[in-house]
Length: 224
Image (cartoon, rainbow, N blue to C red; front, side, top):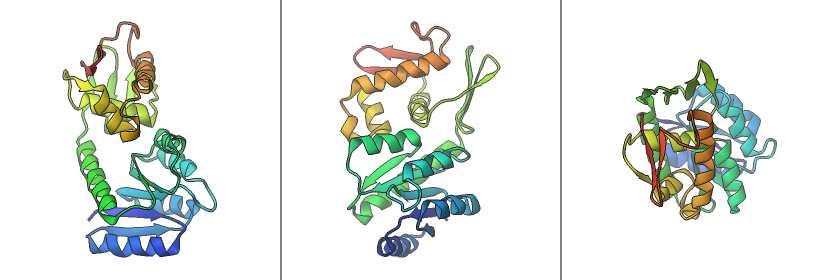
């Protein structure tokens, strides 16, 4: 049974989500603020966290950062904040998905099913060894030249999409949709900035990449 930690300071919404998620076969744990959420995450080790950003004690983005310090649990942000900056901050901190209030139960259930599928795939994530680095996708660890290289949560999302299709083109639009969502489907420059960061960290010669290859005007390929 998939265990979900729901964090929200609205008692009625929290109770409604708890009842509905249990009715759909989820094991549900709840928390009304950030400190309680951090304790519940450490105690119950949920498979998925549904987290409101507007908590009364700790901002939700900070909660995400703290959880990411020790866990790769899937985090779905649930928030009334509609600004793209808030969404980017949450995703860069390590959130996996973002649902804006008000929302329909069907939408949230679909996001939960998708998160559960991704978690199952990541449980069998590969270890990839190249001449320049070793990448353990499951452990979220990269070693280059005998040293650990830290990738940001957003960089890991890009890497995950590319290594899932070695040698094959992944389009710019697909990466933007998968990593940042529909609002960024045409923001190609945003993707280029992150690809440049990845190459600087992992490629022997970032100006002539061997592993994260550009297909001009189309997208990117990962070559082990």
